[in-house]
Length: 151
Image (cartoon, rainbow, N blue to C red):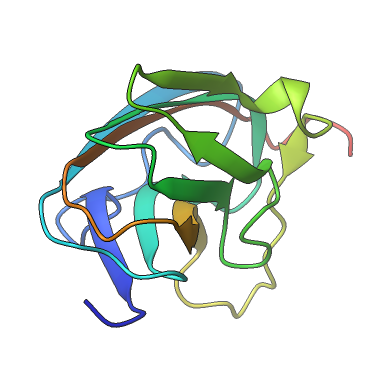
């Protein structure tokens, strides 16, 4: 697989960002992806759509691989390592909390004419140590949609 971008999980065109866009709602979204073909360094998997104005308050990456062959980052379209940078996935299963790696909350602020009016939480393969198939990962994100919150 060449370096490429994949809309998977809840980032496909079939899903809209969850939660109303006008206030005070805590939303939790989990998306799962199984990689069954060999992957390449710099492949990006768009996992979850986050609406404009949402504040990420917590998140997790849970992953398991058939071999210790992948190094990943978790971020978005603006910074592919915004939440987690250069993290190795092991065969015994790996879990990492976003808040331990980067300061949260993080608020998404898109320009009024941005189209679409959302960004995505992405998993990027920053290193492929061995060409193996068999990577599975879940991304869980909690975000607050609240127009009245201060920056």
